[in-house]
Image (cartoon, rainbow, N blue to C red; front, side, top):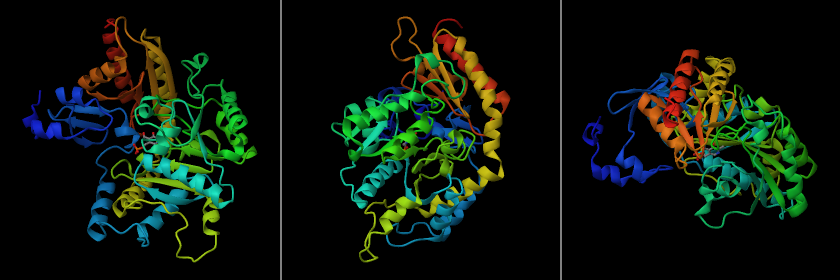
Length: 447
Ligand code: PLP
């Protein structure tokens, strides 16, 4: 096994890095170091080939080391490495904004750039509040999220988010309320979108009754909730949410940081589910994960509300933005990635492989430790119960076993999450789920 020296780092260097969303103490005892990536594989410090079962972090659907993206980045870095995001523009950001609108549902044709999914979440929430204020409805500030929702780690995002530990130690957040999540016991082991549960959207009516629509700015949901373990929306749920929002003048935001650009086999989750929100957040697959970038697409009426306010035209319509908004190198990476998605018919490929992934995932539903299997598009989540005498460690232990077997999968809360690259083969899906079945059996002592 590779030593720190083989990995090219010292103990002090290992200790210096406070790692994100990682059990630092455990990792530093047993580092899982990724040293290289190509196609659908990572390579560790021993040169071991590890199948990328989560496309990075739901980011790299096109696979790693794509030459077209590498070339676009290199060319951009030598031509224009950085350009001030405030008060100046560069051509690529305008080209990219229009290109993104070609992937958005009709009408979402104004694009604001951010540096990440978390920044997209908070940007969308700020736009929603500011929009109502510009319309003379300043009391509409409350933000509605959902149990098990994940909207990144900034203050708006953790406030509307519904994963307790992400919020619990940080104190008071932004004024928000939550609908229930949509994981129903009667829907366990449903393939794709469950047929029961659309009426859970009526939670919004209860929240309106309690807080009044005159105080509510927006509702934010992920069409398919990825980080909580692949939770597809019940059939009709998003449509009902849309109707309630329309009836009560509440903006509907889809956080598509995972769903947008192909994970569900369509350009967006909105397209996959046939419901158009007012705002869509995106990141991750936008640049194939190669350079950090996020974006928020809005209906034109929202943009126009800001532009129509009168006053001198050099006045900022929205005092918001980031040093790295519309970063030229990220724009170049995104333009190249979006071209590849289309040129290689990735959405069609995802739709073709989804039933194969669904079949393989649900075959593991028979295992003792598996309490639910959910899937949508090229994504699957398995909930695990605790092994006899075990703590809540199971998904972590399974992910560890998988790593040892040469597969990278993600664990989060009680789930194992799978989201392979878009051009995954049937044989690769089979071997990944065979390894997963073996890992789970090993844990329950059935191997
Ligand atoms: N929103 C959703 C739906 C996500 O899945 C994520 C990340 O997984 C985020 C926001 C946060 O994105 P980032 O980690 O790029 O800030």
